[in-house]
Image (cartoon, rainbow, N blue to C red; front, side):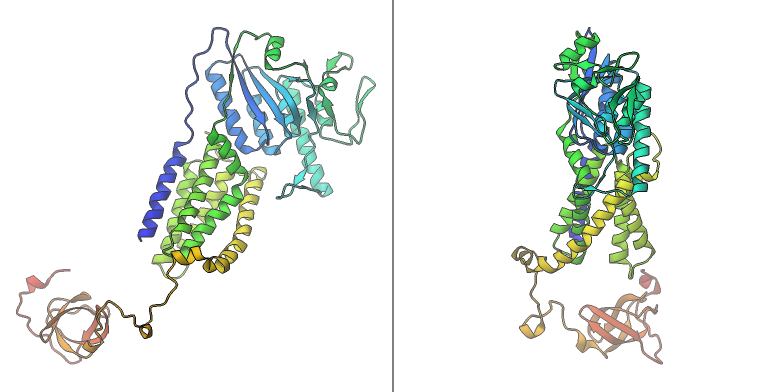
Length: 489
């Protein structure tokens, strides 16, 4: 019980850490010339980045910013994260710009095309947004033809819609996705079939067609100050959205979710299999708490997921330790725990109901399944290898305490009492006191309720547990006490 109390106290402390979340200072008042917010989009584009962008958009709105500039250097990321980021940008009432520092490939190109204007630094590149299927180990996997067409069609529609709403050419945008498409403008060959559209900064600002409009980029600028000068907001105060250490850590936790899940569940499993060690349970609780905390900071999980997981774990503990067998409570506990873990990874917009569309559930379900698949061999290896380590032997008593080796129980040997007769001093319901000659003993029946004065016989004795039964053919004899003094439950 003490080990569960210690583990529970640790869990409550980490829960408090989860509920606290990152603390962000209120933005300072706007400068006389207005404010421009810059939001960095660097590295992998994944669901945890969505929280950072939403926070930046909210701060820009609160400061009544004149513009938002997304400073981009990315090789891409997940399509579903890009879709949500595009949706967030499309809802903006503030002018939005993209400054491509080095690269805006794949999901980065889709997000850039959702902003009103794109500017690029010298040597920057943009394009190549055709979806690919990644393996769990980071490699590229060949997609079946039907699945590939389905994925390409979905991304093509997404990038066309993003380009149309922001004023970019949807045909140019779609050529970044469809390799078989032939892109021509006013009879001029822009990109032939068999090639995906990927452009340098010079190529992206090339003016084509009858209206001589740039392909993608509104121009090449040296840096952010030059961009602001070009769009006419040079005197504005520039505020860069600072990504906190907690948010950076949360993005790593969200990406490594299967490992945290596997480690957390493995620690809880080892604690149940080796009660009293405590350390595996503590490590398991820490890993699971970090999992929920990371997804909470990343804007994916709330406290409701933590409550569901704790409730499921409580039901499982009651089933394992208090109720014999494994029935309804255990199954319900496992279902609640698995749903809490899955729900914590499903992306949703704060304040809106959670939608369980397959594209949103697919990746979290894969991560959960991967964690469970990794858990099985990890548990088998830990069961075989861990007991052989010196560290484990220092934590667990692995020596026997048999009587043949000179050990004896601290409880008194009461087997000699079997067969003694006496009388109940009080009602046995089913426990109470009885007198056997000169000895007064605490006894218990086998479930019978017997009145005071019943003649008894001792039939079993295990240390302090003395079991009695009514003597056959015996009558109740007076105990010398009033009935009122014996009616204690």
